[in-house]
Image (cartoon, rainbow, N blue to C red; front, side):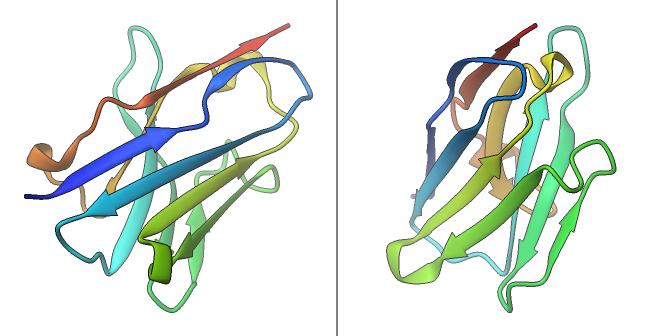
Length: 113
């Protein structure tokens, strides 16, 4: 059974930083992704990382967020710096393309102005 568990969210002031973690079990992923869903909006892809550590970012987070992975620990990370109120959302990890049966509960990130 595949499980993905996100953690590390919280409340932070604008300009602050958070580091999210995603521990996965039950399978391995060629491409890992971090996604987010803000209230009233569709879930969107924030960042991707390939097994060879190539990365790709949404324009809205480029230069502020960094995705990484530790395959030995079955963990993916999202370092978020210079956070903005518009980054407020529930953040999820999943493979890319995402599988509906892999979504976890996510971790809430709230950025106050």
